[in-house]
Image (tube, rainbow, N blue to C red):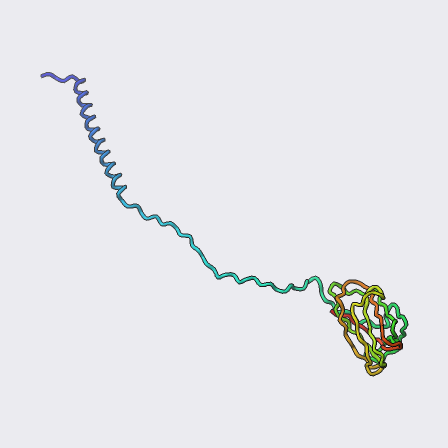
Length: 209
């Protein structure tokens, strides 16, 4: 009995294995192709795109303009009462004991062209806009008291009309409006009348904001 040579046997065995491997490889490719096809045919999960959330708020109220607040650094400090007899200069007037509340002295015998001067009065940062003046008059002469700053000849910043109060010791407090005054000034009180003669007595004055 002839035996096949080992070389021939090995060659046929190798060829058989090669065929099996080829068949298996082809089957594997078919299976892979089938699986890929199934995967492509399967609908993909829906993709949820997050939506931007828009929040609407109530319209902001329109800005309103308010009146400016006073500066906290500036405070309206009340002014002291200035006694008439404390003037630095009394031109044409004299002092005498007063019959009024508080006692002390007053300045009398005031005629036109007389004046009183008060040096270095500090009005501060908040302007003064008024002056109160304690006066008495016992004559029919009408005149005017004028407030001037830094010079007796300066334009008046305020003026008060003077008339008969019922007697030389019948005291009345009158007020005059001032142009706003601040800072340190020399204050002049000047007097004028249409007729000559004493027409007013002066006890005190006080500036106000």
